[in-house]
Length: 186
Image: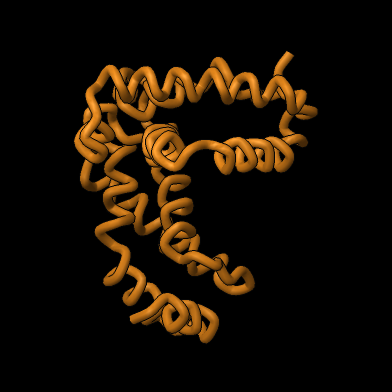
């Protein structure tokens, strides 16, 4: 079934919308969640939470790209679940490592004034990503959006670990410069 028909079922509030979504994108959503969560029960829970979030948000929202929208919902659900687990169980995992790599660059924290700038920061990140060469953008997104381990990125693109690590380091440096120019970093 094509995405338009699935979205039409969501808008009609047909319960088959979730079934069709799971049939078409279930494996993909599980992969996104598995990059963050180590336990299959947690993966299932995150994917189900993503389907529930889709059910609640469609309508009124009609995503242009259902696959990407589901990935975003799944990633959000998996990260939320991951954060709620005991810190001892989380330590040293791939999501923590990837997020720590970016933590020194991206502004954030509990400062309400900073949190109000979230939409502008998102736009700045979109502009940054749009300006990257295709391969560099894909590697960056695999690491920091999908939270893929370095070795999985190496296998996907046929690169050595040193190439991926240096590419990511250079891209993070470019991101830092971009965010400084945009006024997000001092």
